[in-house]
Length: 387
Image 1 (tube, one colour):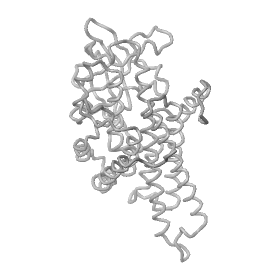
Image 2: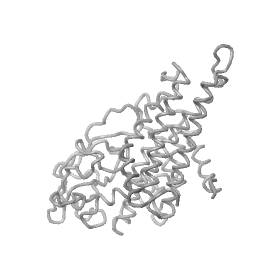
Image 3: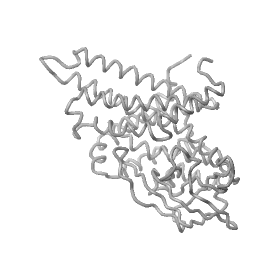
Image 4: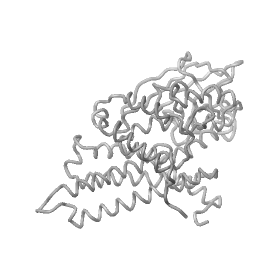
C-alpha cells in the first residue's frame, strides 16, 4: 500500500501551486473584498487547460485522474476557494455530458468546453427544493421537436458566464417513484425564455457568482435532452455529484490546510509574556489536533478519488470524505481564528475569509446529514470499509 503521489501527480501539484502563488494569492483578499470578478485568473486557467480536466483527450481535454483533480481543488482553495467554484461546477457538468450524452452532444459541446471557450454549470437547486431533488417543480413539456420548460433554479454557480446549462426537470410529474419522471435538458444561453436573475448575496464563496435562473416558456430542441432518453435525469445528476463530493472534500482540505498554515506561522511570530505563543501548551494542543485532522481529511479524500479512478462505485467513500473534510474545514478555520485572536477577526488577514468560506463545504453537494444518509445506505447495502 503506497500513500505517496506518483511523480506525475507531484509535478502537476507543483504546477498548480506555482499558479496559485503567482496569480491567485496576491490578489485574493483585495478582489474578494471588492467583489471584483477574477477575469484574469479565468483566462489563465483557460490557457492551462483547466476547464478540460474531466474531458477526454479525444475532445481536447486533459482527462486527469481523480487524485490529481483532488490536488487541483485543494491547491486552488488554499489560495481562494471561490476560484475553485468556477471550474468545479463546469467540470461536473462536462463529466455528465461525456458519461451520458449522445455522440452528437459530445462532439457539439465538449471541444469548446475543454478550452473554456464555452463554459457551463448545472441547474439543480430550486427555491423549494435543495437536498430533495425529487421535489423540484421545474417542468419540461414535449411540443413537437422541442421541450417547453417552465421553472426557476437558484444558487446556480457560473450562471452569468455559462454558454450552456444542463437543467434538471420533470418530464413526467405523474410517474412514481418521482425520479423516473425526471430528465436533464441542456439549455443554451440566449434561448428565448431563458434569463439569469439576481446575484444572491453570500457570506463567503465570493469570486464566482451564484444566481437565479428563470425558465419562462423556454423552448429547447428535443435534441438537447441529455442522452436522448427521458427519465434518466436524476441518475445522471447523482453520478456527477458522486465525483462532485470529491471536489468539495478537496476544497475543504484546502481551506483547512490554509488555516493550519496561517496558525502555525502566527503562533511562532506572536509573542505573549515574553514567549512565542507556540511555546504554550494550549496552542500546541490546538495545532496538533488541526494537523492530524487535516491529514486524515486529505487521506480520506485521496481514498475516495482512488476508488473513483478504479472505476468502482464511490458514493460511500466520497460521502465519508465530504462529510469529514467539510467539518474539519469549519473547525480548523475557527481554531485558526482563535489562535490569531483579534487579528483573526480582521479583514486585513485571510483567516476571516477562510472562516466565511468553510460553512458552504458542509452544505454544497449535499449537507453533512445527507452525507450521513448516503453512508448509512451504502453500509446497509452491504458495503464496508474493512475489505
